[in-house]
Length: 223
Image (cartoon, rainbow, N blue to C red):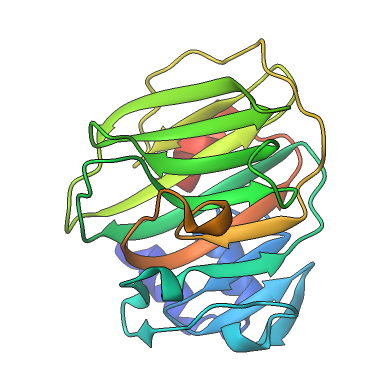
């Protein structure tokens, strides 16, 4: 982060103001700042992460963020988030399981309708979307998910227009043949439904942003 931006973030005393600086001016619908232990929903500061309505899971907060050391630390919370939207997460992976690992997932309470950011079994950051139990988007980033390294991942989930960026890099063309069906009602951080394909590491912040965001904005969000 450039010195001027870092100073602006430090001096800004409002949670939404901090979020907008980190998000290039965009206003998040949901903002979970695990390093500051603060949450913002629809532009309103709701207090600490534990104060988010309906959130469950065991929080393990430190100076670097929320540590997911076991499935007990997987967080689940209700959301109201119609398509299209962008999901962004900044995190540090701590374990290579050798399997797919989902750091964030939005779904309708089932695995049939979901959007997720994940690490593939070959250690590459990807975004995926399922409609009616069929994978209609599985975007590759070409970026390795290195254990111990901080990464920012953002994906746009929009009808016939999905893509992702990792650490300001976008390597794939837009997917223009992807459906959307049921709007998500649940956010999961660290795994899928019933803790399938868990991811272990530290989540520093997560943002969900309504609306359509360009490829250039995805790269800015993850820069």
